[in-house]
Length: 356
Image 1 (cartoon, rainbow, N blue to C red):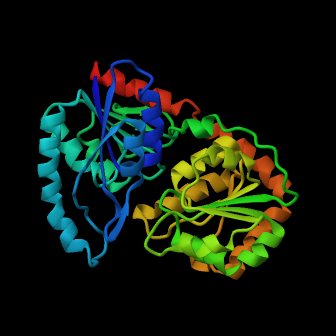
Image 2 (tube, rainbow, N blue to C red; image 1 turned 90 degrees about the horizontal axis):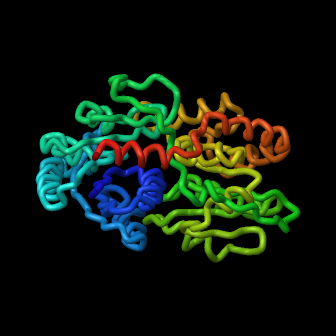
């Protein structure tokens, strides 16, 4: 059985791939973006990680509809038909038994042409807000897997609750014996990192390391944040572009500082780690703020708006979290109730059953 995965939400795709590889006779092909984003030549995580896992990666060049006119608007529109042409030949050559899409603009040509070729299609919606790509793909999908018990804008007869897949490194995270006397803070901007957060950390790093031991994941982008901060490492400050054992590090942390992407929030909720979140304010339908408010009601997170983010206010908010850490941790542990721990297994099984 050949399963073609596509999409830009790579963290949940990786968790599902780990589960799919358990089944005998399953061959996995992944169609995704070659670079992180338009205008940034940095290779995407999927293009670098998947070949090392024995998963064939095929890049596709396509465009997306943008909500505001930018330097990349016209080139992006021109690339849309290119994406459909490439998707046509990919599907002809690969002849998959089923398509599993994780959303994002790269998935749309594959899903639409897959429907035209009568290939069974399942899409997964990670967030509480349905993105434009999944709204479009939902019309062509046979089955739509969702992450939470809430009302989605999909045909109800297609919807199945699987939860949001968690990577095995999160599910199997180990308790690391802490030797630090100060609390441990993990700061991450996700796979791509966050230049905005990195700058705030850089501004107050000396003061921050006096109140906590800091583990900082910068990502790898054109701003060269890691290269600047690498020279400032010491016993209280560790910095890396990526953290391979993220589950263990998260479990070690007393506080996580992060964006409000649904995958990160799902992971910290599963582990019961309190988080100070800085939602990206300009996403479609204000997705990250809605994610953050959902988990704020559960007691898992406190929100720091990006509009207020500077070094001084950043340090003030961290101090506030640390001063109330025991109560914050108690609330965070209760948020695990909304997480489906075996979501990857459920999604993998739904995908295989659709192909049979």
